[in-house]
Amino acid sequence: MKKVLFYILGGIFLLFLLYYAFAYFAVYSEGTRTGELIKFSKKGVVYKTWEGEISQGISGAQIFQFSVLNKDKDVIKALQENEGNYVKLYYIERYASFVFWGDTKYFVTEIEEAKSPHFRDR
Image 1: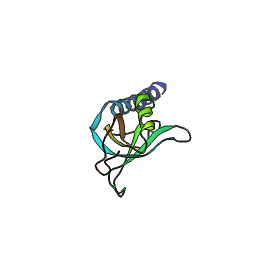
Image 2: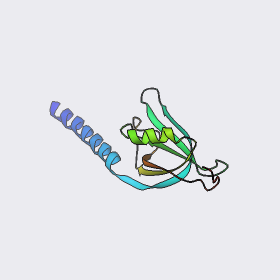
Image 3: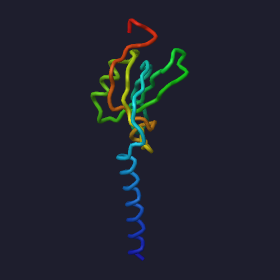
Image 4: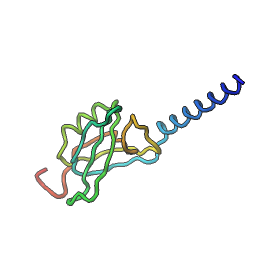
């Protein structure tokens, strides 16, 4: 009986490890988005994650929500400095996310300042 329980628990643990490895290493897509950075904050009760939004239109009808992993300190600092500015975000989209990674499946890996097509002075 102990042997069967050991195999069942071992199998469940192995399936969890495979799912975690798949979610961490498998990238569904990668690309760029450009827009005005309208929100960037650290939020959460148990797990604090970095979440942000960029507006991709004048009316704010197209909002792109993204997350940043805690290990990407340079990206976090650059986003904090560029809030309210027009930015180009490089991101990866994962198949799944965990609660301790962020609210979205889109994770920003790099940021560049960009020129706004709407306002020439920014």
